[in-house]
Amino acid sequence: MDKIVIYDTETTNSTIWGSIIEVGAVVVDKNLKEIGKLNIRGRMPEGEVPSAKALLVNSTSIDLLTKGNYSHYEFLGAVENFFSKAGPAMFMGWSNLNFDRKMFHFNFFKGNRYPYLTHSSPNQEHDGLHIARAAQTLNPETLKTELTEAGNPSLALEALARMQGFDTSQQHTAFHDAYTSLKVLRIIRDKHTDNWDTFLKTATKGSVETLLTTDGVYSIFENVKGRNMMYLACTLHPKHCFHPSYASWGYLWDLRRDPEPFLNLPVNQLRDILKRFSPKALRVLKINKAPVVMSKEYALKQKPYSDLDLATIQKRAKLVRENENFCKNIQIIHREAAEEKAQTKTQEDLLPEETLYEKFVPNKDTALFKTWHSSSWEDKLRLLDKFQDKRCSWFGQKIIYQEAPQILPPDLFKNIKSEIARRILSKNKEKWQTINMAYTEIDYLRDQASNRDDEVELKKLDEINQFIMSIEKKYEFT
Picture (cartoon, one colour):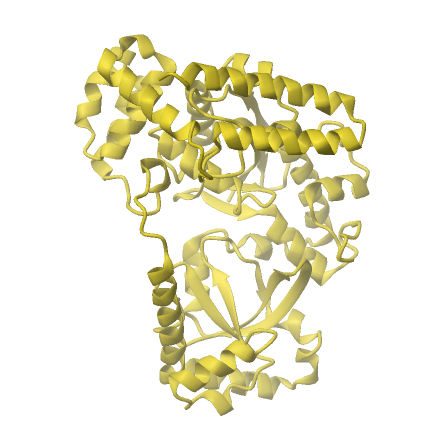
């Protein structure tokens, strides 16, 4: 890929119910030379209750939250436009596959925009943290690190910036963190010139799927309880190498384990034995999470694999790969576990905002998005009936309520406002942030700030509290 977009977000909350309010991105060529950038902030959408902790972390004042140049709708449009023009590219951040990508999924989904822009072909997506873990495991001198409380090297971006001697005065602002990620990646590339392209080669689902269904022995990397680990693992039988319920999970066999005693065990016995193994005999590669996969030679240099000769390694891999019934039994074990988990899953009805992964938006509706966004607000209202998916209609109604409420029919305006009030004024512990939850969070943070005699933070919390009160007042008599 000739271009990489290194990006970061700041949000009002760390859950799918929160909103992205800041995006920073640096576009670089394949040599990591800067060729473009984005630094943009938007207002919080109407009808949402922010997390006080999130606002403190990303230094968002109430003025920034409510009086920025871009509304949330305009902000998402500008980001979508920039990302579209930057492509085709590899999108990358720091732990972005665990957080930022998911936030884009749900923010774009709720905004009637295509959710998977950053990793739909021809775009690719990787994670700087995955690359750093692999690089640091191969060579612990790659980056200067400090230790966590558990005594493990920290690859948190803030800690790495500090240890590399970077300026951290603007940390936890989106553009600063995106640029810091770039600077760390430049260090890794310079110290791992021969491996850099290999680090990047699993940035698509297809590349990982091909690897899992092809006969091979590989070095793979995981973070286990804060420790960066490397494993020597082989692929399973190609017909039975994926989780039967979670299509993005592929399995490898850890070659420290001799599979021969287990090949012909019945399912129940095999299940019991696999549960007892520590470290686990089966390693998971998530094909949509850009796992770094290297040549077997790296893990072969480390214990316990260095105690085994290559002929033993190859024999074990062949036994696993060619025993279809054994690999089929592994699939059965995981299917039964998934079915058992599904039976205990809550049966409560899901709200539209949380159904993104439950079913796809019809192609007919995604094709309508561009027309809908380019239309006047009056035409947007009329076009809502054209959406086949009722979720798109609801999101469109809510966007109009937030952006141009004056054009909504009175009954529709009242219904939307009542639904928002029902959610945010709930006295229950909800999945989203409620007014009550916000007050509880603020009280807790006040106690902590008081114990530190942090007058600056206490003043910020007072401002946030006043803002929450204003939201409550607006919706309490709806």
